[in-house]
Length: 223
Figure 1: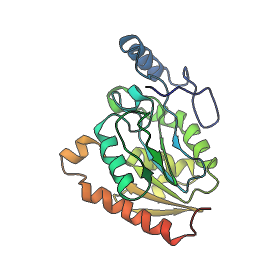
Figure 2: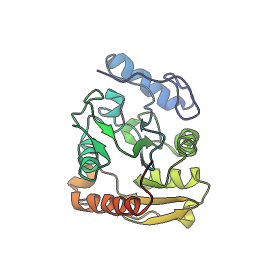
Figure 3: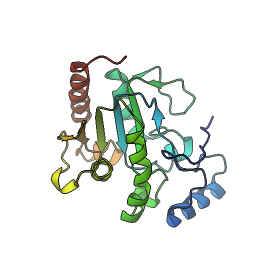
Figure 4: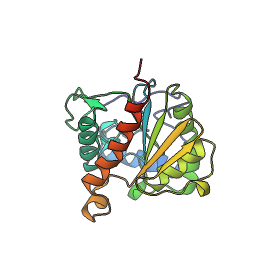
Protein backbone atom coordinates (compact mmCIF):
# COMPACT_ATOMS: atom_id res chain seq x y z
CA UNK A 1 0.00 0.00 0.00
CA UNK A 2 1.36 3.40 -0.98
CA UNK A 3 0.97 6.72 0.76
CA UNK A 4 -1.11 9.39 -0.95
CA UNK A 5 0.62 12.54 -2.17
CA UNK A 6 -0.67 15.72 -0.55
CA UNK A 7 -1.87 18.85 -2.24
CA UNK A 8 0.23 22.00 -1.95
CA UNK A 9 0.65 23.38 1.57
CA UNK A 10 3.33 25.67 3.04
CA UNK A 11 5.08 22.56 4.39
CA UNK A 12 4.58 20.17 1.50
CA UNK A 13 4.91 20.27 -2.27
CA UNK A 14 1.97 19.01 -4.28
CA UNK A 15 2.11 15.84 -6.33
CA UNK A 16 2.92 17.75 -9.52
CA UNK A 17 5.18 20.41 -8.02
CA UNK A 18 6.88 22.15 -11.00
CA UNK A 19 9.49 24.18 -9.10
CA UNK A 20 12.56 22.17 -10.20
CA UNK A 21 12.41 21.24 -13.91
CA UNK A 22 15.10 18.55 -13.72
CA UNK A 23 13.40 16.81 -10.80
CA UNK A 24 10.00 17.17 -12.46
CA UNK A 25 11.32 15.44 -15.59
CA UNK A 26 13.00 12.70 -13.57
CA UNK A 27 9.79 12.11 -11.64
CA UNK A 28 7.80 11.89 -14.88
CA UNK A 29 10.24 9.36 -16.30
CA UNK A 30 9.83 7.10 -13.29
CA UNK A 31 6.05 7.48 -13.26
CA UNK A 32 6.06 6.09 -16.78
CA UNK A 33 8.49 3.31 -15.90
CA UNK A 34 6.94 2.36 -12.54
CA UNK A 35 3.31 3.53 -12.43
CA UNK A 36 2.65 1.69 -9.16
CA UNK A 37 5.35 3.63 -7.30
CA UNK A 38 4.63 6.81 -5.33
CA UNK A 39 6.81 8.99 -7.66
CA UNK A 40 5.93 12.35 -6.07
CA UNK A 41 7.32 14.78 -3.48
CA UNK A 42 7.50 12.91 -0.19
CA UNK A 43 5.85 14.61 2.77
CA UNK A 44 7.10 14.65 6.34
CA UNK A 45 6.25 11.73 8.61
CA UNK A 46 5.23 12.23 12.23
CA UNK A 47 3.41 14.62 14.54
CA UNK A 48 3.88 18.40 14.26
CA UNK A 49 3.82 18.50 18.07
CA UNK A 50 7.03 16.45 18.28
CA UNK A 51 10.08 17.99 19.93
CA UNK A 52 12.53 16.17 17.63
CA UNK A 53 12.89 16.51 13.85
CA UNK A 54 15.21 14.44 11.65
CA UNK A 55 16.21 16.11 8.38
CA UNK A 56 17.49 13.81 5.65
CA UNK A 57 18.79 14.63 2.19
CA UNK A 58 16.12 13.49 -0.28
CA UNK A 59 13.94 10.45 -1.03
CA UNK A 60 15.79 7.39 -2.26
CA UNK A 61 14.77 6.20 -5.71
CA UNK A 62 13.71 2.72 -4.59
CA UNK A 63 13.03 3.79 -1.03
CA UNK A 64 10.76 6.72 -0.21
CA UNK A 65 10.19 7.59 -3.87
CA UNK A 66 8.71 4.11 -4.26
CA UNK A 67 6.82 3.86 -0.96
CA UNK A 68 5.88 7.47 -0.20
CA UNK A 69 7.21 7.54 3.38
CA UNK A 70 10.61 8.99 4.35
CA UNK A 71 13.40 6.41 4.70
CA UNK A 72 11.06 3.53 3.96
CA UNK A 73 12.15 0.70 1.70
CA UNK A 74 15.93 0.98 1.60
CA UNK A 75 18.98 0.30 3.79
CA UNK A 76 19.08 3.81 5.26
CA UNK A 77 15.59 3.24 6.60
CA UNK A 78 16.52 -0.15 8.04
CA UNK A 79 19.22 1.48 10.15
CA UNK A 80 17.29 4.65 10.99
CA UNK A 81 14.06 2.99 12.11
CA UNK A 82 15.88 0.30 14.09
CA UNK A 83 17.72 3.04 15.94
CA UNK A 84 14.54 5.05 16.51
CA UNK A 85 12.89 1.96 17.98
CA UNK A 86 15.92 1.29 20.19
CA UNK A 87 15.87 4.79 21.69
CA UNK A 88 12.12 5.10 22.14
CA UNK A 89 11.45 7.48 19.24
CA UNK A 90 9.26 4.94 17.43
CA UNK A 91 6.81 2.20 18.36
CA UNK A 92 5.55 -0.84 16.53
CA UNK A 93 7.31 -2.77 13.79
CA UNK A 94 9.16 -1.43 10.76
CA UNK A 95 8.47 -3.52 7.68
CA UNK A 96 9.64 -1.32 4.77
CA UNK A 97 6.16 -0.17 3.76
CA UNK A 98 4.00 2.78 4.85
CA UNK A 99 1.17 0.61 6.20
CA UNK A 100 3.39 -1.41 8.56
CA UNK A 101 1.76 0.25 11.58
CA UNK A 102 4.99 1.87 12.82
CA UNK A 103 4.47 5.21 14.58
CA UNK A 104 6.92 7.87 15.68
CA UNK A 105 7.11 9.01 19.30
CA UNK A 106 7.93 12.70 19.92
CA UNK A 107 9.74 12.59 16.58
CA UNK A 108 9.18 13.65 12.97
CA UNK A 109 11.14 12.92 9.78
CA UNK A 110 11.52 15.20 6.79
CA UNK A 111 13.97 15.91 3.96
CA UNK A 112 15.90 18.91 2.69
CA UNK A 113 14.73 18.04 -0.85
CA UNK A 114 11.27 16.51 -1.24
CA UNK A 115 11.70 14.87 -4.68
CA UNK A 116 14.09 12.11 -5.66
CA UNK A 117 17.10 13.55 -7.55
CA UNK A 118 19.06 11.69 -10.23
CA UNK A 119 21.95 9.76 -8.67
CA UNK A 120 20.78 11.04 -5.27
CA UNK A 121 22.49 14.38 -6.02
CA UNK A 122 20.31 17.49 -5.95
CA UNK A 123 21.81 20.65 -7.38
CA UNK A 124 22.43 23.74 -5.29
CA UNK A 125 19.52 25.47 -6.99
CA UNK A 126 17.19 22.55 -6.22
CA UNK A 127 18.25 22.53 -2.58
CA UNK A 128 17.65 26.27 -2.30
CA UNK A 129 14.29 26.07 -4.08
CA UNK A 130 13.01 23.26 -1.86
CA UNK A 131 14.21 24.91 1.34
CA UNK A 132 10.90 26.78 1.59
CA UNK A 133 9.25 23.49 2.56
CA UNK A 134 11.87 22.60 5.17
CA UNK A 135 11.64 26.11 6.63
CA UNK A 136 7.86 25.81 6.84
CA UNK A 137 8.18 22.40 8.48
CA UNK A 138 10.52 23.82 11.14
CA UNK A 139 8.29 26.84 11.70
CA UNK A 140 5.19 24.67 11.94
CA UNK A 141 6.47 22.62 14.90
CA UNK A 142 5.70 24.73 17.99
CA UNK A 143 7.42 22.41 20.46
CA UNK A 144 10.50 21.71 18.35
CA UNK A 145 13.66 21.56 20.45
CA UNK A 146 16.13 19.26 18.66
CA UNK A 147 16.93 18.80 14.98
CA UNK A 148 19.19 16.05 13.66
CA UNK A 149 20.74 16.69 10.24
CA UNK A 150 21.80 13.58 8.35
CA UNK A 151 24.71 14.70 6.20
CA UNK A 152 26.21 18.03 5.20
CA UNK A 153 23.52 19.03 2.71
CA UNK A 154 20.75 18.56 5.25
CA UNK A 155 22.88 20.37 7.83
CA UNK A 156 23.53 23.41 5.63
CA UNK A 157 19.90 23.60 4.53
CA UNK A 158 18.60 23.31 8.09
CA UNK A 159 21.03 25.95 9.38
CA UNK A 160 19.97 28.32 6.61
CA UNK A 161 16.28 27.59 7.17
CA UNK A 162 16.77 28.41 10.85
CA UNK A 163 18.15 31.83 9.88
CA UNK A 164 21.82 31.16 10.59
CA UNK A 165 24.93 30.90 8.42
CA UNK A 166 26.48 27.49 7.69
CA UNK A 167 29.93 29.09 7.81
CA UNK A 168 29.39 29.72 11.51
CA UNK A 169 28.09 26.21 12.17
CA UNK A 170 30.44 23.72 10.54
CA UNK A 171 29.16 20.22 9.90
CA UNK A 172 30.88 17.41 11.81
CA UNK A 173 29.66 14.02 12.93
CA UNK A 174 28.23 14.20 16.46
CA UNK A 175 28.61 17.99 16.52
CA UNK A 176 26.04 20.07 18.37
CA UNK A 177 25.02 23.63 17.50
CA UNK A 178 22.78 26.10 19.33
CA UNK A 179 20.65 28.17 16.94
CA UNK A 180 18.07 30.22 18.80
CA UNK A 181 15.81 27.81 20.67
CA UNK A 182 16.95 24.86 18.54
CA UNK A 183 19.77 22.46 19.29
CA UNK A 184 21.04 21.06 16.00
CA UNK A 185 22.90 17.76 15.96
CA UNK A 186 24.88 16.35 13.04
CA UNK A 187 25.43 12.81 11.85
CA UNK A 188 26.87 11.29 8.74
CA UNK A 189 24.01 10.05 6.60
CA UNK A 190 22.94 6.49 7.37
CA UNK A 191 23.38 5.38 3.76
CA UNK A 192 24.66 1.97 2.75
CA UNK A 193 27.69 3.64 1.15
CA UNK A 194 28.70 5.33 4.42
CA UNK A 195 28.25 2.17 6.47
CA UNK A 196 29.96 -0.08 3.90
CA UNK A 197 33.01 2.20 3.79
CA UNK A 198 33.16 2.54 7.57
CA UNK A 199 32.58 6.29 7.50
CA UNK A 200 29.59 5.62 9.74
CA UNK A 201 29.28 2.61 12.00
CA UNK A 202 26.08 1.53 13.71
CA UNK A 203 27.63 2.43 17.05
CA UNK A 204 28.53 5.92 15.83
CA UNK A 205 24.93 6.38 14.75
CA UNK A 206 23.57 5.09 18.05
CA UNK A 207 25.88 7.46 19.95
CA UNK A 208 24.20 10.46 18.30
CA UNK A 209 20.75 9.19 19.29
CA UNK A 210 21.95 8.49 22.81
CA UNK A 211 23.04 12.13 23.06
CA UNK A 212 19.66 13.33 21.79
CA UNK A 213 17.71 10.99 24.06
CA UNK A 214 19.69 12.25 27.04
CA UNK A 215 19.04 15.89 26.12
CA UNK A 216 15.33 15.44 25.57
CA UNK A 217 14.92 13.42 28.76
CA UNK A 218 16.60 16.26 30.68
CA UNK A 219 13.93 18.67 29.50
CA UNK A 220 10.33 18.77 30.64
CA UNK A 221 8.42 15.67 29.62
CA UNK A 222 6.04 16.19 26.70
CA UNK A 223 2.48 17.10 27.64
